[in-house]
Length: 449
Ligand SMILES: Cc1ncc(COP(=O)(O)O)c(C=O)c1O
Ligand SMILES: Nc1ccccc1C(=O)C[C@H](N)C(=O)O
Image (cartoon, rainbow, N blue to C red; front, side):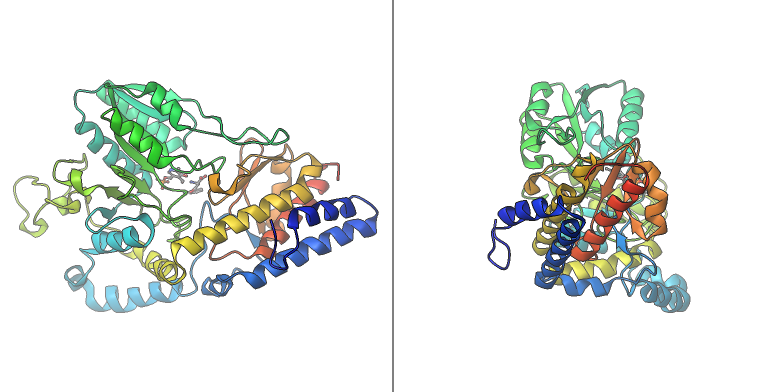
């Protein structure tokens, strides 16, 4: 691997590591080299200017929690203010006829084309991810009424597991829980697990109704082979529902091309929609006319304002809308989609991978010597937007980190997830964050180095 100066960076890093393990002077030199490298990565970053498009966060030195809650864009506050004053305040009830009623679908289309690889008329903005998943799981199961099994990940995000447990119980179905297996780990790293296509192939059969998995594992950041697993499910005659919470806005998706049936994801992580911003759902056009969903509300019918006697689902994707959409909650997301359009998803993913590669490099230099273990794939092509590390003192180190404006995400029992959101995070910021984690772990009693 060569860097922008043409030097062989692997060889150079080895030399730096040796320099850093010597005298105090050597250690300082090692840090200076890492910091210099961060600065040169920032200087070469074609998306660096976009960092200025996010609101300042006073006292925050390093924000590494884009995988949980993205930062507000700089104009989100003004957009919310002007929406409140001019649209809500000025147009009042007339606003529903002037775009609000259509917003779940117009913004869905925009999100679909900017980030999901979804043609128009297949994406809607709904409620929380949990509720949208609930609708899609039921819709898929209703399309396979004679089948009795669901395939799911036993270590998926709790909401996915709880939904599957509940729905399977309600419908008398059996769940084939897959245990995540090793996917990519150097011997010195923690075990990195995920769901592999062969595991799905082993259990998929003509009794499988549905496969529900996350595209990017919320713990390890491992990217599942979505096209291969979708193909395996289809060969068995089953349908797929993909949870895209950790991929939407972090990497380009091609839902139409990959033949996905249903998908859902949140908009408050890498899409920076803000706390509680509504989730999106995707339904492939080939299913829309036959798919039904369980939350039959007045806004999902062919003509809501007729206030008809019974529920007649709209022929299009609107049938997945239930009640009054969270129009106010969609305002910041529009601002982020402007930035995504400017930057392009390919460039966003390239920067995301460069950032997490750099975090892994910093991990090797600064944290591995303290006995911290890497819990994410080393291979950038298998890694989503965050890097997970494990050490028993992570929880003890957290208050000092927050105090210093270094904000990773703690996951019990001993994990820190470092999620440098590509448009809002710089390489020097990532360096400051990992350096702060090293110092806080040392202060909490870690030894080595
Ligand atoms: C994989 C995954 N699914 C679902 C959710 C959340 O669901 P909700 O938006 O309903 O809280 C998250 C994160 O919160 C997640 O990481
Ligand atoms: N929605 C939240 C509300 C409060 C605290 C965290 C979240 C998260 O999004 C967690 C995230 N999904 C995770 O992968 O852990």
